[in-house]
Image 1 (tube, each protein chain N blue to C red):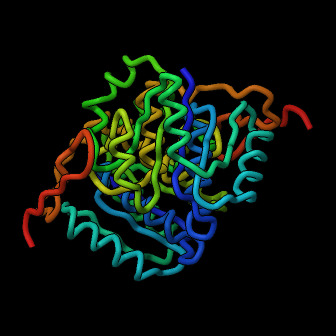
Image 2: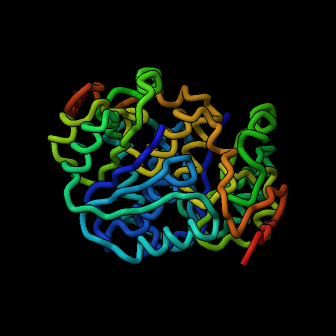
Image 3: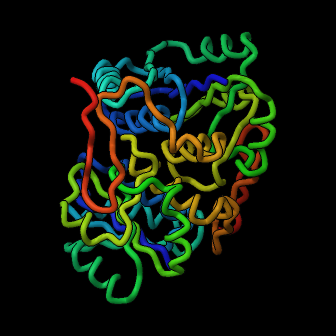
Length: 177
Length: 177
């Protein structure tokens, strides 16, 4: 199963760090790719590419103008669209159905205002708890449930750096230059 | 068990949204309180208090100058200190020990640079996967594991607003004015 994250309406000034966190979470928790809309931000792209180079894996980031087109293409290729929103069905009540669909997943992560059309286009509107919190947290917990925690042990190919877990302090192995 | 989150080195300009997300995640995923250090930010405090008023529960936010004092007090009162860091022991390898301690937990969430002393003072340095991602995500996933997903169904007393989960669209019940 391929998992892509679609981040809506990025604004470099306001969202710089939140979108960066969304991308890093997507990679660390097992998604293959992030697509973002809004205003193009080459600094963001560079910083994510740098992380991938250092820490490994094949994660990629792509900018596109039209979120509708991304969703339409995804639906045409038989994938399911999961929209994370506090107004949706609570994660514990819907995860089995999403997992059992056994299809590629496009996870849509909004920012402040998500067009109401998005709620209609999604196959699943999913709340990670029906409380206000964070799209970064929602994405992480969704992926952690989806992969049942196994993503926390995921290896990343071609890494230059690798952490050796420590009780105290920091230990990083440099695998290549 | 009481759970408090300690957010280190908040800088209003740079961290506004990330710290807000840390606080909202702490509340939504079952912590009782957040304490933050760094630069005092009354806007942040107001926005969190507003959320609690609207969405319920007893979550509180407090500023303090010295993180060392918070940790020392916590240790003197027999609680354990969990420091979330990508360099620590991976969550799946340590969660049972933390849960079995059956003690109040102070979860420390850093920002860019965490003093090395913190790694020494913590009872547990915990990595939510040993990859770079986000303190917001790390906190959410840690709490979700700790509460075994039950926090996603948690009710919040005295809420003015409550979401009624929907397949499509938004439905909010106004419980009082």
